[in-house]
Length: 353
Image (cartoon, rainbow, N blue to C red):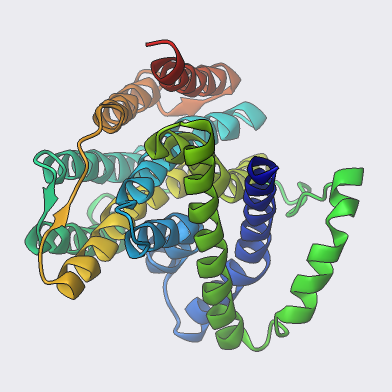
């Protein structure tokens, strides 16, 4: 009965995270970007990255804050989410609509992403994270933001996206399952202020996302203890997929509209934020607060997942290059099946090996 309660808490929290992020948090960030006259590149690399990666960031923060050394949950969630974003989101976007991508932003993001993964592997190599290593991760993200802003001037390019205005901007779920959740939607409508109060909406979204992520982490720990699955596996699979679903929905929508380049950039760019800020910032704050280094856990599955992630980046990049930056359903299904292979591999490692 307790296990069912934990699963119920996970499902409801995932749904509320998706709704709060899509309906309140990201729109408030849009308004803030307009308020400060931020360019599209700058807003995308900073505020939009925060918007799409907020759940993973808060899971990492809360997993460190909880007593009992659960930091591996935050690392696992971000690594698992990175795999899901790269293979499933890019794959699903390619399945729904073929597109031709501009190579310049793909090369930029894939290069920084590869270096980010290598940096994560280097930082975790000895089980310790120093404040200098965490600080360098944050600094490297600042370099990435500068590169995003300057890249078009260095390597001029024209977006290949062919926007179809007839495609709907939103997807409504006309199902009984959606109607069951109407009370939750009504609760959110009553709780959040009107869109014109976007600073208040932003602050309340942050608080709500933090609470939901605390529920997710506590529920994941509970499930792990009851069914005797390592916390890392729960994080790499359940939490990673659940926190990435909002990203997938938004990427598929823009891909159907003909903005395949935006969908790919969103998936890869949010992964860079996840690794460098989603882990680097909580680590730095934790180390400064505790006055020492963060002791990491040596996990075979984590090292394997990071290596698989790096290999996936290489495969995805060279697939784009060989196909001359064109994506389509065949490529998309290949990426999705690669992710399913990874999931089966992880589960077999727990139950059969």
